[in-house]
Every structure is written in structure tokens, then in C-alpha cells.
Amino acid sequence: MARVEDAVAVLRRGGLVAFPTETVYGLGCDAENVDALRRLYSVKGRPRDHPVIVHVELPDALAEWSSDVSPAARALADACWPGPLTLVVPRRDRVPDEVTGGRDTVGLRVPDQPLALALLHEFGGGLAAPSANRFGRVSPTTADDVRADLGDDVDLVLDGGPCDVGLESTIVDCSGDEPAILRLGGVPVERIEAILGTSLAQRTDGEVAAPGTLSAHYAPAAQVVVADAGATAARAASLLASGSRVGVLATAPVPPKLPAGVVVLEPPADVDDYAHVLYARLREADERSLDVVIAVPPPPAGVGAAICDRLARAARGSAR
Ligand code: TXA
Ligand code: MG
Image (cartoon, rainbow, N blue to C red; front, side):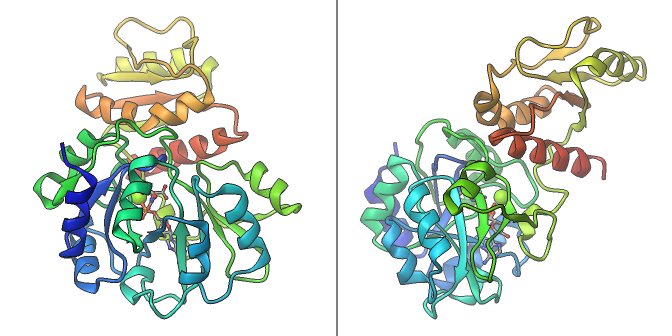
């Protein structure tokens, strides 16, 4: 199995290393190596103006990568790092344009995953890493997902088992006068607002502010339909009648009176488990050649809000 030392050697010569984080697997390269960054973008199939997050080992690195750390950024870093939170802050000159898509801000985060932290420690620098999937596809939550999606285009995959959280980090823009949420994710908005003692604007549909929030993101090949538990059986019946292969994803207990022929994807036990398994279930839907997945969303509080966001995007994306 690939070891941290091998991964560091690959990074030092400008290669690409997929590594686990608590949210999803990242596809990493040296954040200060422009050639490596160009290859990263081409492997991802990602437009060059879409910024990537720089992963760092210690919260203190905030000031090493940002030219202006606001009190809000400091408070959030102190309270949430390591953890599933990305802070967008004014960048220092060491951050290449290839990382920021030419912006004057950079996204930073300290991941809460032992292998990721060991890798960052041994490497000693920052790792630019988007999620380790091709552009627009479902994010990987296991090393096998990464290999299935990227194949030989990634030089080395560190296997840390399934990701704990299963959804990407929450992104907070701390570069302006008022902090704002750019992407819902692993840290609930309620927690961020409690830390800052104020409510925050959500600019989660700003395709310019955070291109990773494009509506077509997070979509499997199967069409995703979001429905209440009470509407699921009737919806499934009409889809089956039109000849579709239909799956249902819902927290246990699954909706009653589902018609025969519906594939019940293994239900998450609770809302945290829903986040944990969501992307795996969407991938499974494709592996099982389902045409449609009817997803019953959790209540939109805490991490449930991020799940609802991803389901809505998957539903919009797959309706293209
Ligand atoms: O949980 C995560 O954040 C994972 C793991 C690997 O850390 N990474 C991830 O990266 O989800 P990616 O590239 O799939 O999404 C990064 C998001 C994009 O929406 C991007 O637009 C936004 O972060 N972002 C990065 N830097 C930014 C900046 N300077 N300004 C605005 N948005 C930024
Ligand atoms: Mg992504």
C-alpha cells in the first residue's frame, strides 16, 4: 500500500497524489508548483478560472498564505480547524494565479484526517486539492472511487478508508466586510453563526463567487428526483409504469407501500449517516444502472441543509 513518504516524493517532483480528508478525497499537488497545477486542472477537466482550495497542516498557516486575516477568519479557524471548513481570505503573493483562477483571494483549510495531516506534515508546504473526481462528477469518498474515476491519471492514491463526513467542506468568504457562506457543507451554518455571534448571508448560488456550486455539480448519470416520503410510493409507481428502473434513497424507516420492483438503496440511519453515504449511494445507483433515484431529503437543519443542497443540485444537474 502507498505510504506517506512515497506520496511526498511524488509531490516533490510535481506529481498528483489523491489523499483522504474527512470530507471527500482530494486530488493534491504542490500549491506552489505551477506546472503541477496545470496538470491538475487538465486531469480534472476543470476550467482554469475555477479556484482550488489550499490544504495546510496548522491553523497558524492562515497568516502564511493570507495577507489580511480578519477577526472573523481567525475566530472560525481557531474554532473549526482541523475540520470541514474552508475560509476564503485575501491571498499572499506566494499563491499562484493557477490556484485562485486569477482572484485576489485564496481558499484555505486544515483537514481533520490523520493521513492527510501526516502528508501535509511530511511535505511541509500547502497542497492544492479539489475533490478527486472529474469535473462535474460525484465526489469520491473512498480510494476505489478515486481510482474508478481518475485511473492512471493520478500518480498515487493514499487509502484512508471511507471519509468520515462524506460531504465537502463549508466555505465561508472572509475576504470582504461581512463574512458570507459560499457553500453549505460539513460544518453547519448554525455553528458558524454561533461562533461569530451573527447571522450570515448565503451566496451559495453565486457561480462566480464559488464555481464549484454550479447547479450541474454532484449529479450521477441517473436522474435524481427529490420527493417527500409521503409522495414517494406514487412517484415510484408512475416512473415504473413508464419503464424506468427506479431506486429510492431515504433515511430508515423507508417510505411505506413502495411498489414491487423498486430498488431500495440501503437506508442511512440518521442525518450524519445520510451525509456519510450519500455519494456512495449515488454511485451505486449508476453501478446498478438505475434510471431514476427518488431521494427523500432530511430536515434542512445542521448538516441536513448541505444534504438538501447537494440533492437539489444533483436533481438539477441530472435534468440537463
Ligand atoms: O471538502 C472539501 O472542500 C474538498 C476536500 C478535498 O478538501 N475539496 C473540494 O474542492 O470540495 P473543490 O475544488 O471540489 O471545491 C472547491 C470549492 C469550489 O467551489 C471553488 O470555487 C471554491 O472552493 N473556492 C476555492 N477558492 C476560492 C476562492 N478564492 N474564492 C471563492 N471560491 C473558492
Ligand atoms: Mg468538487
